[in-house]
Length: 86
Image (cartoon, helix red, strand yellow):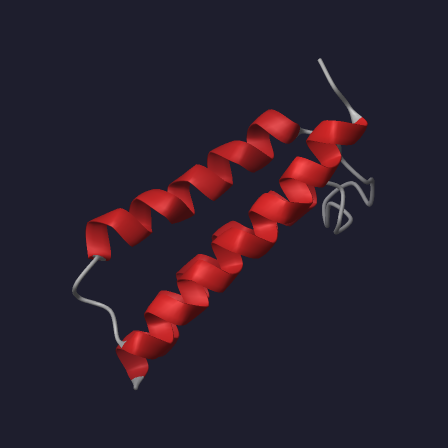
């Protein structure tokens, strides 16, 4: 389904940006590992908002994918947050 692939692509794009900010993926422009928790949280929140706004309109597969991405990103974010308190 094209729509399902498009939705997943948007979620993956936002998740990738979050992972770059979390330092899990090197920044493709600079090659550096970032440590921008605020930036990462902003991308996670965007994914959460997309989930809220599309609730009831997603296929079960899309819903599962969205929740898995949010849960995985949140785990990594919390792990980083606990390493860098304050």
